[in-house]
Image 1 (spheres, chains in turn brown, purple):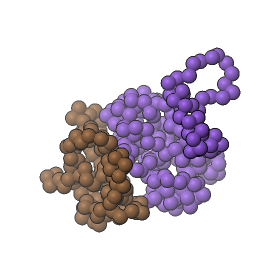
Image 2 (cartoon, one colour):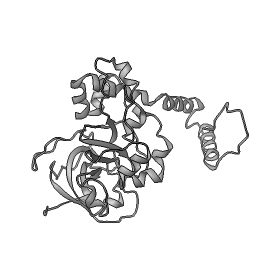
Image 3 (cartoon, rainbow over the protein chains, first blue to last red):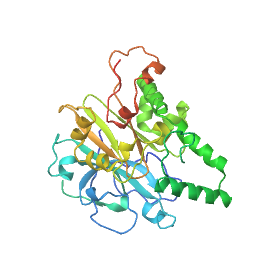
Image 4 (tube, rainbow over the protein chains, first blue to last red):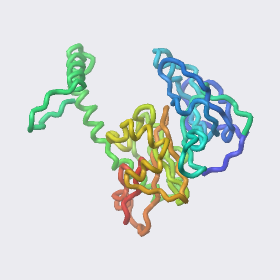
Length: 117
Length: 200
């Protein structure tokens, strides 16, 4: 796996064709997924809400699917990250290696800065 | 579409088959689409098979520079190689002696159709989708793939705009093989990460 340093300016893997909100998080930065339960079409799985993880990469920026599902434009496009979570922190009863991970795409508006490690 | 030419026992149409026929006939009647356009789209979908993904994997095994570009930006590397992947934003994840990757879409059934075709039924099942994120080693063992404890597992949940392909490890004893011969070792399931390539 590539070594990343926190604080490095993220470079989107797939630049957007649309006006996009600026990326707030750097590769390697610790984040927490918002614990919310909005109605409607949401691409953040319930099992990961409230979990802490690390930014693995910035994928690009894409129209917000929650807005698209309401027949709106979804613009400005939202930065989309791949976030890495330790399985042991997602599932307290996880059986497997302590460094097994699950990696998930999460839109920026679902992420908050996590200060404690 | 209902299966044409499927002579054999008579089976009544299922709810979804009936809905598909009704909707299709209505759209054709109203001039929104033509039967020809629908037939072409179905033929196009059926023409996409895991052999396309296998060609990409074999190329990566044979050419380290291509592999590096594939891991950096999967879509661009496929296009450069002449595999047309319209609309696909591809992330390729590499298996190594220390890491095994497996792909799932827990929310629905997102899948790199441009490279692997139509997903198998088990990939869309609630059983696979809910369990492979929670107990990947157990699910992989049930599918016949035992991952040793010395190997980390990375599960990739494709929840949004990216699609994923596993780059398996090149089997031993294949030094000097042509890409065509290598591609024959690459199965659909090893590109999802639930199996290993055929051995040489």
